[in-house]
Image (cartoon, rainbow, N blue to C red; front, side, top):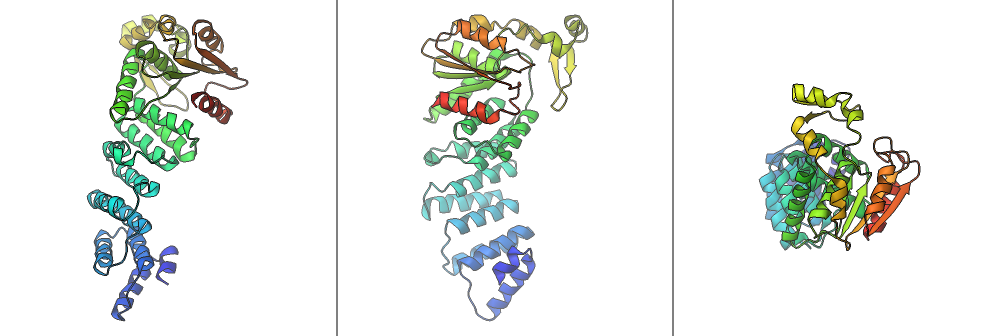
Length: 360
């Protein structure tokens, strides 16, 4: 009956019925406690939830994986992240296997929801949990954490995992959009972002995790190519809709007489319908103009495999750029997706399949 009350949004009635059980000297079991914890979670009753937790311990009720996860969620929803972590640390070691994906993910989600993004990332990279493959909920939370930290480079590495494991569902897509909108877009600074990407890969190397491939789209594609030209530690690079000549496309984006206007005002604000606005400074523009993608590509090691994917109907960056990459890159594979636009709006599955098959 308590279970029925809680499941039908009558949490208070469920708690009152439990009090009547105790008055009649009727003890609860693991299912009773699980429902009581769920009731406290729905009502946001931290004090009552702690009492239920203590009741379970006092009465020797086994706290299994399901109940431990419920307790963890209760503490998170009630704002007590410290006790949530205490539950996690105690029961992830003593009561059940470390490869409990749901329990691990619940703690990562809790950290992200409560504004502790760095703690979420640290838990994900904790060597104790290396044997677990994340699911879409895990990765959506990690992408959200990257957005909170404005760490777009690390977020793009998690996006690689999304593609690799085929976890591109609605929650992950929303997290990707939020991450990109929370982070700051820079018009230039390609080499700086390549160095940031290298710092991220070195972080994973330090945790004994191998980065086998880097993937970039549009500006990100240029960044991964520059990375490959400067560093020789990742042997698979995917260039999705990258621009070959960075001097091209500027007038379409900034308008006519852009150089005169930016020298006069120091910046140009660019508005993008359906996306976040950004500011182009004179410094960032000059940085882009000074970036030689052709010369960088010639420096990429011949052992590094490069895949270029481009949509035939891309109106942002012409498909001709893809053919120019094909002419100068040695260990190179070119794949044109017929009818695809710059964002692969109607070709997401085909794009994911091409990329994943190349990375394998």
